[in-house]
Picture 1: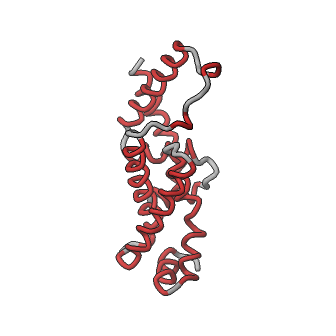
Picture 2: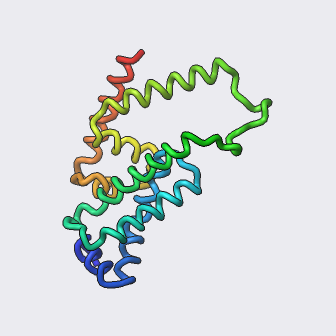
Length: 176
């Protein structure tokens, strides 16, 4: 099975097609919650929820060639929902002994650097945000997989990433 249309039609028809879908997109779906730095358990929940959503909507997928982008959007929404929920909880496994805690000045510098980076990233367009998050947190994905996930032409992934990084650098310089 070569095209997404063939794989989606096979998945609608039976388990063999579903296995082909999971094999084709498993790494991509896993990369999304990883890019949000979710715990392994939360990432596994997002992964499962994403596939469950696809199973529920498989017969309504109108453009199978865009399935990668649909999966990334769904996993992104699931990841954000988990972050919102987890942001209200205090995790005991994140507590560290006092002896290994960073110095207060290191925390301030790190937090300021992270705040500036995220502020600059959030001012970029959604395509750049998604491309840079995938590139940063899932460097093992091929250009073809990234292009499929973002609905881009494979040959434009590198140029677009370069433009997005340049725009991010300019935004960061403006925040100093």
